[in-house]
Length: 398
Image 1 (cartoon, rainbow, N blue to C red):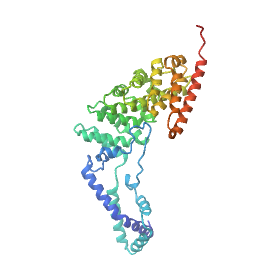
Image 2: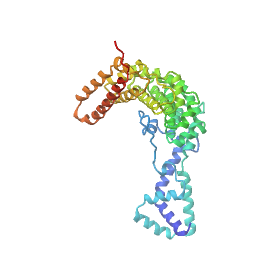
Image 3: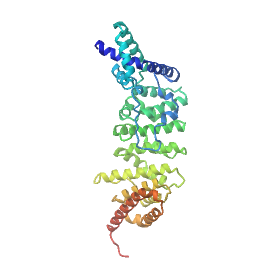
Image 4: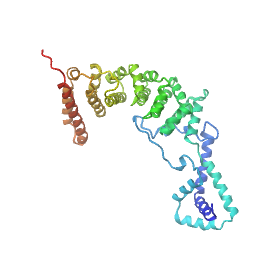
């Protein structure tokens, strides 16, 4: 680097130096006070509420990354620090610093460069892979406190959202460790562990198959029946993520009588409505997957009249989101060749259900008009599909 370029770097970083020094001091203090592993800044030392604040617990699909800038992962080079300094400098003050830096001798410039490099090392934080290793090592430590075990899991929950990190979890030995925590005596530990598996396997066939190979399906289905609602919700989330668009996962699910599990959830009027929403959404996903691969394997979803009625009855809920999810599932189920139109007509009273919903929508407030039109359109579509299916039923004289 020539003297003029070096001078520019130094003058920029001199203006940034006081802020960086404070940050380095804070980082060092955090490392000393919060990290469970000496020499690393481990963000699991943050409060649980801070770590999970950015995650929507009811969103099966959201994977929100945290792009908080260079400070999130440290400056990897002088160039990175220079880019930051340029973007955060006052032009007039920068000009003054440049004039001051021009008067520095080569020895003084070299000294400042060494100081800046030392500061960079203090600011540099572990990579995601290093943080994952720290959390995994802590989970492998049998003497760790319950609080630190929970924090390690919270750390992994954040880290596995990017697909590259999720793909690395098994390589680092993390999947085996997390699966092991599914049988932990503490329900919150089990809950977070299931949540990690759901996040890591979301739309990721590689991780789906890695987790399924560890034989988790039976355990997760048992957790869905837990009296601790959050555990049941996160277990169902994990199951949904594992079997979505995964034929092997769906075969395992149905072999464990997964259809009956879904039916029990949907027909249980005292159960948490969040579980019912996830259950009926999963029904729609499973049926849509079967419709997309028409002509392939035999239909796997059990679609007897009791199962169909459990879905249709959800439309009587006062929760409009659950109503809509149930209608979407009904639309998909009607398109399955294996479902009987007469079951929908005679046993589920689908015609009356659709009429009731239309009457109900006609009495809603004006501010709900946009949503009402969407639901009315969905009801009309279901009505058309339903009657086409009825028309195909052979007429038998009485």
